[in-house]
Image (cartoon, rainbow, N blue to C red):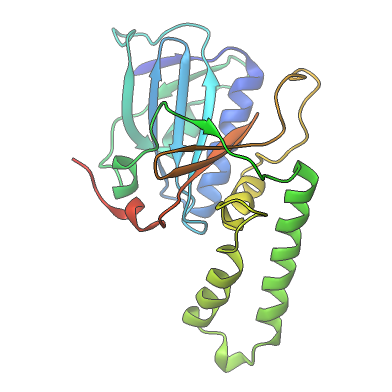
Length: 229
C-alpha cells in the first residue's frame, strides 16, 4: 500500500474528521484522492447535499512505493479513515474501488477567479440556521399522511436551491460546508486566510474556506451524475 505521511497530527485529525463526516451521511462513501508532491486533495460527495466537498491536506514528504510524482485513485472513505494514525500522522491508501459517477466529473484545477457578493461568515451561518429552521417548520406542519419522500424533497429543493445574496451559489452549498465542519472561525494560526471566498471557473462555483471547499455547477447539478471515462 502507498504510505501517506501527513505534515503533523493536526492535519491527520482534520482529514480523519472530514472522512468521518462523509461516512455519517453515507457509510459506503468513496473518495477520490489526487495529489502531487506534498499536496493532497480529497474529494467526496455527501448525498444529502448534491455538492462536491474538497479537503486538502499537507504531507510531510511525497508518496512512498514509487508514487513520488502523482497520485490519482478512488478509494473507500471508511478504509482510508481506519488507516489513519493521528498520533503518528500517517495513513495508507487503500485498494482502488470502482468510482461512483461523480468521481469522473471534478472541478478544474486552475482558472479560478474571485466572485463578488458573498456575505460575511456570520451572515452565511445565520442563513443556514434560518433555512434549517424553516425546513423543520414546514415538515412539522405536514399531516402524517403527507410526509412522503416526494414532498420532503420538494420542500428541500425549494429552500436549499435559493441563492446566497446576489451570488449564484445555492444555500445547500453553505449547508454542506457547515455540516462538514468548514464554516468554523479562522484559527489564529491562519491570520491571513479569508474566512470565506467565492470563486468561479467555467460552469463551476466554489465556496472556499481555510478548512475545505464546496463546489457546485452554475448550470445545475445534473452534470455531476455524468460519468466521464
